[in-house]
Image (cartoon, rainbow, N blue to C red; front, side):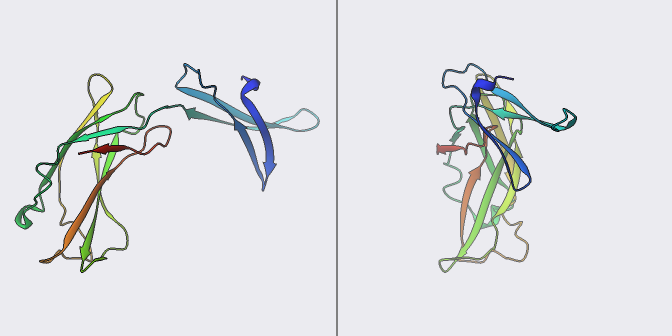
Amino acid sequence: NDTELIESIKFEDGQIRCEFTIPNNSALDSFQVELWSISSQGNHYSSNTGHVYIDKSSPLLLLELKDLLQLFSSDLNRIFFEGTVIETSALIHNELVVNWNIIRNGSIQNEMPYTHNMSLTKSANDNYQFGEFVNLTDTPNNDIIEGDELVIWLSMKDNSGQEMFGFG
């Protein structure tokens, strides 16, 4: 509703595009945007409403790596991932992804990373906890053999699409 924020509205390739800037001093954590089309006779054709989420900081990962630094091949089907994500706004999608690749002789063996989705549980002070066992042997079309390496990383995006970062 605040037309002062709108920088431009364009119709390109069959799509309406609205560009706007959120003020730096905004206290809001989201803006509702509504676009509508009206004919030259004033007939209302359609409208589309969406939300733009504002977040000035990326999620921060706190992870204890002591148990992940040494994995035993006999336990790869039950590796426990536990940690905390700190995020300043309430997350819409409370999910974090464990990703891994199999490296053999310096080459990645799988075409796409293997993944396991983990739920995040909100706790106090903008913290989200996670803790689950992950089966790293769940690798269709690839067996892990002696000498293979696993490259493991965690990924997540907040409501604004910012990637999680952190150190363990």
